[in-house]
Amino acid sequence: MFAHARIKKLISAYLDGEVSDKEKIRVEEHLRSCAKCKKYWQELQATSIGMKEWRDEEISPDLEQEIRSRFLWQKTKGGTMKKTKLFAGAASVALVTLLVFMLAGSMESYKRNTQGKLAAVGDQIGDGYYPILHTVEKKMRGHSNRSMNSARTARFASTGSTLHLFSPPHLTSNEYAHNEAAGEYGASVYKAAVGVYAYEDGGPIITVQPYLPATGTEEKLIRTADLGLEVNDVQTAYDKIVAISKDNKGFLAQANFSELGRGKISARLSVRIPKDKFETTLDEIRKLGRVKTFNIDSVDVSSDYAKLVTELNTQKIVYDKILEKLKEKKTDIDKAIRLESELSPVTKQIEAIKAQISKYDNLIAMPTITVEVFSTNWQLLMQQNIKTAKERLVNIFADLINAAIDLLPAAVCIILLLLTALLVVSGITIIIKLVFRKKSS
Amino acid sequence: MEAKMKKDEELMVDIKLGDKGAMEEIFQRYKKPILNYSLRLLKNLADAEDTAAETFCIITAKKDYYKPGAKFSTWIFAIAHNICIDKIRKRKKTVFMWFKRKNEENGYEMLDIPDSRPTSNERLEEEDAASLVKGAIETLNLELKEAIILREYHNLSYEEISQVMHCSLSKVKILIFRAREKLKTELVPFIKEAQ
Image (cartoon, rainbow over all chains, first blue to last red; front, side, top):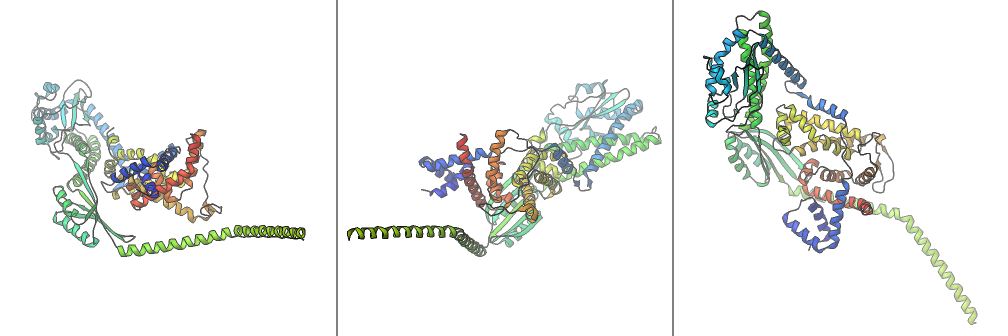
């Protein structure tokens, strides 16, 4: 049977679902048999519900605006985010200008340059994709190898309308394999981006289908593991973890060593391990001490990765187009300068996307294992506990003296009252005795 | 739509990669909890707003310190906790913000800076009940108050609270138990009255 004080502590934790199964059974058994504790539990519940009366405040629009401007436009590596936005804006303007330019450009000369690609793309993709392709691609032949690569991200079609966005149909396994073979970047991850090139009388129009079906065979997972180990000697464990990570072709990414007080010494290490060695390394590290906490997490970034790849390919298509236009003989100097200036933001965009992809690649290829090793110096802990206990005793003693001082006037009053009462009672007794004596005499 | 389905931890990975959409999403998810956590702890809307703004700025500035796999809610509340504690310490140093007032527990009490701005809960009955709860929470010391606020208003587990407050799990259990005991004494008579 639990003491009531102990059960009360458990009831609070029980209310939050923070008790072990064993404790839960004990609490529930006790609540069934003890009306007093049951009442206590109900009152705690009522308190908890009552607290909800203090409602949440809404954030003011001004503050929201201020935080958003400060939070979203913080400085980032390699410039401010404002600059990034400026750059994105410039790139968009450049793209629109390019589209208008191409629309107004010479239809005939451009057609000659592009027809070859259209035909090849038709061959690459296969006749099964879009019926609309049949009308065009068979007439067009011969194209460079480079556009073969972009074929998997672009479809070329000739129609009468201005803009065409085709929803990509589900690819069959053969088609997917076909696309895979033609891929240039991260073939296993490609989700087949779709850019559509359509013709109108004025010139070609580039449209891009930004969202793609997830048809990848390999998931892109960023894996992490967190491990809490209690060891006898932190320094030795630290050295061993570093050695294990080196043996497994990994490296130490981050480490800190701290004495937490209350006799605890702790070290926190982050090691990056090749993904094929992730499990084995984890097992080796686990054996170094008593596992207190253990957590493995995987974040699937497949769709984001695929989006980046798509964006990269789209930008590359735009890049190729501008370059092609530049190489044309008919292009005058003004046009050439304009095109040249449009090329630069696209190149920057391509580089930025490549950097992001490589960041993802790095996180995926080298999962992170974070290990917290700690040990307890019992001697130091005991010393500190004794010191705390002493301090508490002194405080209690001081409180008692203060209480006594506070009570002193009241005590004096009571004593005086008692004395007065005593005097009165004795006086009355004496008078009564005297009266009786006189009567008897 | 896709971003909404993502976990906070996934969004944080995106933020590390410079995704502004993820930043916005995190902001939308945590703006209200962080403001209200600070408000309940600091008792002053202006300070709470400052804390919320600083918290989000720190997240952006220190995003590289976030360890993938660590619980994001714990991280953001720990940042807000540090800022709040810092503000309370600064208040203590500012002498004019204190005045001597007899209090049955400690002898001295911190001056509340009344906020003239209207709150969103204007209704009278709500105000009455809310002020009762506020008053009861105000009787708690800082540790008890923070532990119970994180538990009751933000549904953090004991483990998460211990990480936010940088203390042991057993201490959190005791803090919450003591806070509830005190609040029960303060609130239960009124709850019974209402019933």
